[in-house]
Image 1 (cartoon, rainbow, N blue to C red):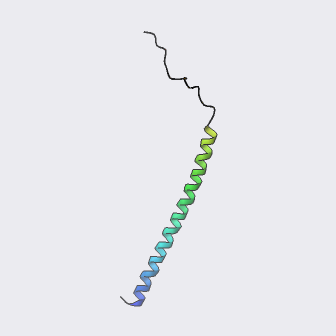
Image 2: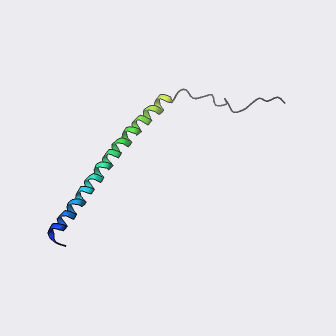
Image 3: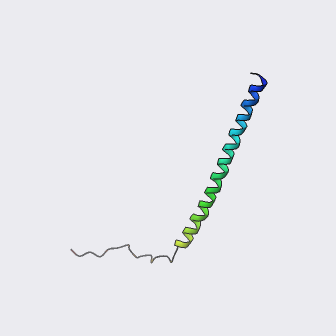
Length: 62
């Protein structure tokens, strides 16, 4: 393989690596945002704890 072809191959490899890294950074940022939003949603939805025996038994007459 001559030097010019090797240079092209190495440049293409570097471009692929940079693109892959950019995608991973975007995915990481998206996951962080979703994690923050999920935490906020869970904090908003938490109310008072239900009564411990509420809904545990059913009264039935036959």
